[in-house]
Image 1: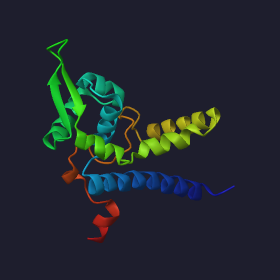
Image 2: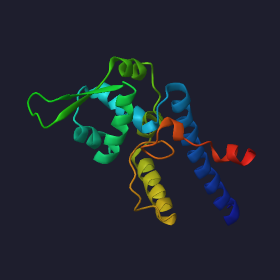
Image 3: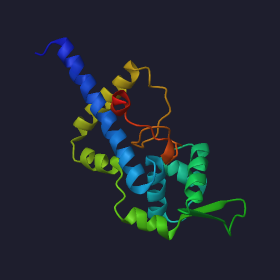
Length: 175
């Protein structure tokens, strides 16, 4: 059996790899598509579902209404979404992806969680439960069990603009 220090180091290395994979994917989205992870998730959902209200969108992507509002402002400023008043209920606004956004999403906008979900679905139920239990325990050990989080694999602030995505820690250390 490996020494405790070795196991601890391997756990920390694995956690760092996960963090770096998410960070690298976020940078790829930002540099290649000019989008943050949450923006890409929202656009993908709008393309998939068509018109949605802000609250419907918030529920579908597990983000707060305030967070959705901020992200939608950024997407609207880039002409990637449109809003219109609902004919049936004038109090509601319907949000829709623009044709430019549809092209962007259909050009295989890569979402890290989609690839992850596919691979996770290939596991047996007991393996999924084991992973869930281990990750929940890690969150608890890091005093992170009460942190509000959505199922979006992205680094940085959930409402960040592309311009505010920081360099990876390793690159900062080199400077």
